[in-house]
Image (cartoon, rainbow, N blue to C red; front, top):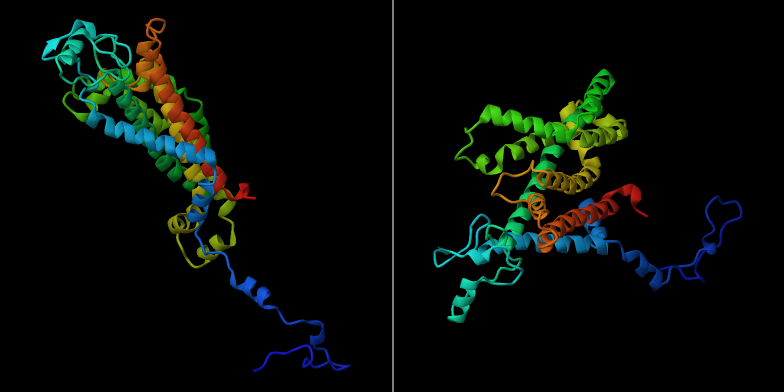
Length: 359
């Protein structure tokens, strides 16, 4: 069938209700090509990640965290010292190896170097007991990151479960559950850690000796219990607010009319539509937990010696800060780098995945 040309387009009849085709012009080849160019299909996650990697601060934070993770996992394989090992030279205790400055050697190590032997350098120096400070900072960062990740998982699981029930059921159940949240908000977390540490010390005693939990100590165990008891309330309130704004939408009412139970509606229809906000809040919970652990370790309520954390290292360096300021500088910079990177990453995730912030 041949295309119409301006000369072959029929005129509109006087009494016809049809459109006057004479007012239209055939599309040019360029205009037709514009309709063929369509946006590539994508998913919500892929679109959010594309926006995230366009944020320079978020990309810098991802690179910093990736380098930090590589360092804390690769460094113990390269550095021949242990975090609790008092360094000895040829099996002998070297009294001059304590409180060394960064990239320096003791007298016995210098003698070995002069004899042509290789001695691995002390990158951050040594502490007052003659332990390599670099590997202690590395293990301290590993402990702090592990606390942050596990605490965020605990907060996510408990807060997601509690907030989903409260927001979806509503009514008196919601009122009672939210009053429990208000009561928990009023409990001081530091005091709870102290009380639980004392109670666990009395109850458990030496029963943890020889187990994995013994390396953590009662203080760390009580800290995780406090995270599970107190820190989930913010997540619960966030999830509840999201569900209250979503549960009356048409697709939820349609699923309910089709006979879907409450668990399936929450799992399949409600939570996926507020998962971006939950994901962002979880990412921001990690630096909060790391800062809490560092603060508690700084006041002596963190990991049990000789296991280091960044907060406990900063506390130990406080006494000799005027003579050895670098001992305070390294763990403090580690805390600042981790917390700042996660905060910038959380802000980038919020800008990328929150639909309300999209332009």
